Length: 73
Image 1: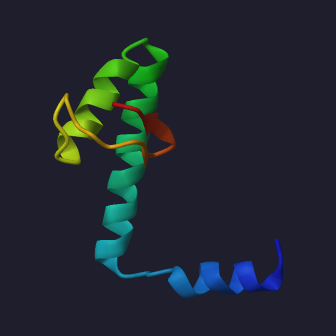
Image 2 (image 1 turned 60 degrees about the vertical axis):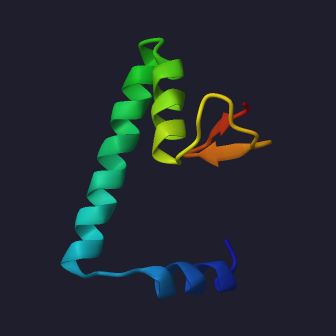
Image 3 (image 1 turned 30 degrees about the vertical axis):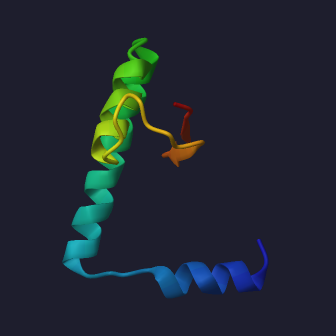
């Protein structure tokens, strides 16, 4: 990793309590999603992400990426 990338990462750190809580919640949601995917319920995760993004089942979006999961309607 070069110095520019390291400096950018440090500048984006927000050490407030609200930022730490948000980071903890995101990590928890990712763990839950990973567990569902390992259990073979990946379609459920994708459907939930589509709902959270406000997409319907007949959405016309070409490609979305949510937490590394590609959604192709």
